[in-house]
Length: 413
Image 1 (tube, rainbow, N blue to C red):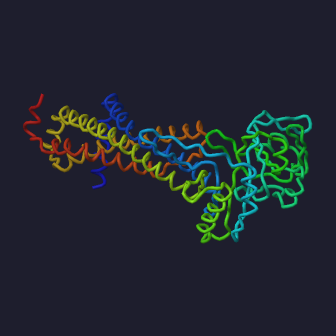
Image 2: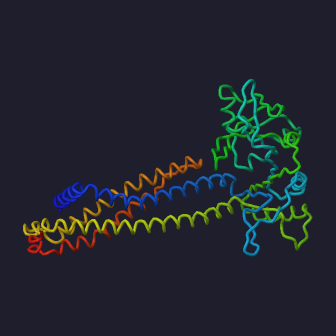
Image 3: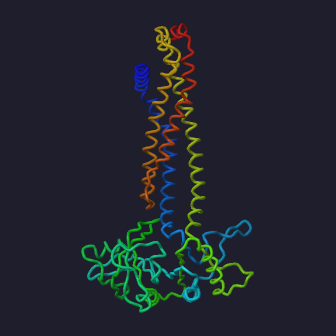
């Protein structure tokens, strides 16, 4: 049995080699469908993995109070978002003072600028460093980790100390050859002593999260005095089962701060990291569905093309089939030969498609600054689909070849 399968494989391989151009075109048609499947699934996986890792770092027991929800309100046929007032420093400070739910920590922060120039001795960065003003809870609530040195403490914030915590890329840019702790950096003429370096977080949508400098809140307020600065409030609970209660109490507290009546809607947004992850999951589900639909349409065309080439192959090799039958070849042997040929072409197309699709996913991840993940599910699906395509496409030609009459086949010109 093994020797027969080996012989049929050699015959199928010789047939493929004898029709190089036709085989290459068929392989490419199959590969296009597999490339579409693997490429799109890989790109969607990269997108989902990157966004999910960013939001999940906040922790499942964290929620934010911000200016807007991540949704829009419908008004007739048009979609627009109502204009909410910014969260002012007074709003944020009142919330910190009034919010006393047990086992919670509240952080206040704002982006002073995303294009600061930071200097160390005679070195300086390009004006692309983000400067964030924050209190002592910000780093922990944001899911950030200290790699070297320490975090802010209560006295750093209350005493308005000139200290800072920097991102790993800022450390590499200015302090790569020295111990960064206790070195002095200056930004906008103000000097800050480095007390900590953050672990690397990477980039998202071109936004480098490691090129930043975090300074005490009041120091930042003295440096950045724009009237329209919007503050962010983050609350973290130490106990997961108290998250719902903490969130409800935060909403009622902030409604009182905003002086909203019971009939008025919230003019602020509140978001939990797990809510965002669920929303991302629902969006990527549609993307996965679209990927499968596009790929299946292309793969159906590939199946028809493969079936066509095998029918042509049966017709061209009618005399060969007649000779083999005259020499004693059974129907199942003839059918297995064409089946083997179909599977060989199908798997060649699958391999090429997987390589091209993975390459597209890798390029997409690099261009968009996403975390590249190997699309194992897409690869397995591609191999399975290529095998099924080969079986479906090879079934009718194999049956036709097996049913040929040996005498009529020998007469075929």
